Image 1 (cartoon, rainbow, N blue to C red):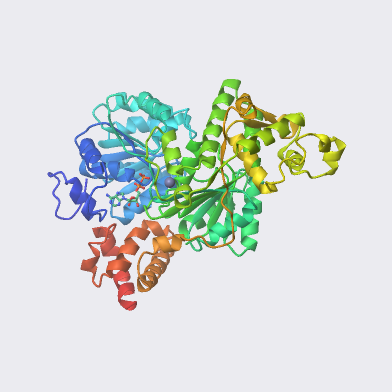
Image 2: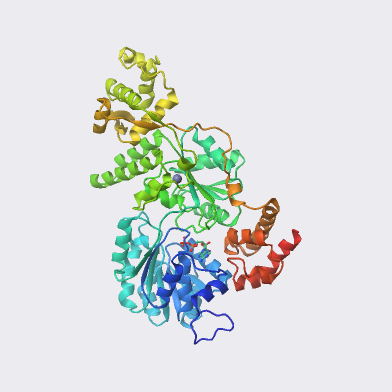
Length: 610
Ligand code: ADP
Ligand code: ZN
């Protein structure tokens, strides 16, 4: 129950009041109000909303409004720790029960639970379904069950956790206790699966568009990827972000190279010592602005709201994976960036991983189709957002104005003749060579290999002098992305014609290519700094001073800065300049517990910056 001083036990606190007094927020967002009222009234719910939509409040507020303790199932200990810390900062009585606790700490929590002294308890699924804990819970007043990251129950999802399967017993063991399943997973298969497995067929389903309008999507052609990354990071100095690489080795090399370039970059992958990994994760959460270079071992359960960018140096395995990884940026709703560099080598590498992987052929076919769908997004000349959302069954009119394709539309050119030349050169050289050699033949380069195979006598030799090396690479990449050709890894990347190439070769089908934008070291027109700092220079100075105060307070307590205040709250403070603790109450994200605790310190910063 909610414990504002004047609250009596008999009355149920009103959700709007809890929102304002505990969380310091003026109004519900989207369907939050509806979902919360439904849960307060005891209904089951499936909540399908994108990252950053505000799913946490959907169970936190009902738990505070209903009698008893809200039990939250969460897959990761790091995630729990952060959420519990953030709740405590707002004056909510929250705790987490997991394997990191000592016996004494665990029994303290049980005691508090029995005494009705906890508003929210976070537990891991394996702990919750253990016999002892189930029996114990049956003697406690449970306000609701919230199953966070509910997609973990589905084998379709990429985060499958077998322990989640056992959560199906909650319905039988706790009849009448509302259950809420929450996830940001967008694909329909996973959704259906989780509803079915959790026996939530009668629950009310709440879903909204999966669009993340504050994320700017950019996909560039690889051309010295490290330097391209460097230029991208230069635009985001001091912001915190993640750089994803496919292999551990590449993670380490990239982190080293960035460090040598004067950028604070920390590696993270499953092969590193536990203590190093924890230290790097901690620095990412608690310091301002290090870049974390990681394999996909990092990210799930990272709730940091102010990740400003996610960069990919390698191609993810599918649109689902790409969307989930990039979705870690910008939970707080401020402008954020998803950037990827991709090239022909990535396509070959991914195809090889599928071919040489251990999956049965039927699964490999699905994996190939998923990769092709992602390549379509990479090579599209139309809006990226439209292509991404279409994959999740959503329509978007396509002029999002916040992706590279919308911001700098690419020119198209009639590539029918070039495609015919390229396909013919592949065919005439026997479908045994990679792009490099075939381009030599097209451009009429008498390389040693060309002479050795007598390819300088072919009719296609030198027919493509009008297009430069990079131009041809672009042609081959786009042919591959459209499935007209494929690279055979068993034969060292030899290019082969696909059936769909025939009508093009025979002149029955036209082909249009996208002209790759010229990459230059020039600064791009829009920098994240500018996008975030919409205010005056004085406002920016104050914002930085407020951030410094927040970092100082966070260090004192050993907690991440964002559990004290989010950037969005500091931005508002910088804009409105509250000159007294009373003025603080109107800043979003500043609830009564935080005013009492930090009000004076932040007002002092505002006053000293005048
Ligand atoms: P999700 O779990 O859906 O990814 P969170 O619950 O972490 O999202 O919330 C994302 C961000 O949105 C947080 O910074 C949170 O404080 C903010 N937020 C949530 N609800 C509201 C609201 N009604 N008004 C303003 N900000 C909100
Ligand atoms: Zn767009």
